[in-house]
Image 1 (cartoon, rainbow, N blue to C red):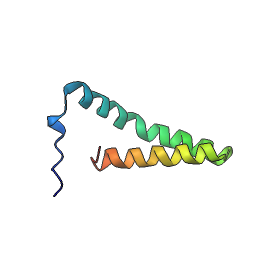
Image 2: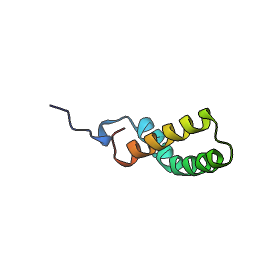
Image 3: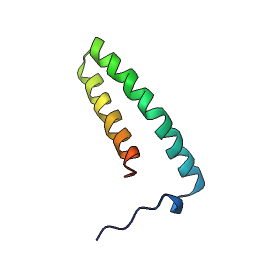
Length: 63
């Protein structure tokens, strides 16, 4: 059985890093999405995919 994830069991510095990452994830996704529309390279598409997955994980509190 999976252990319940509790954000308050993390050290304070890690909670701060997670909060900052959550604030910057959406603007990075928007910027990378616009960049991917204008310059669609393989690296841009992969980077956008990674940013979207990290944003979803932060939103759903998986990480």
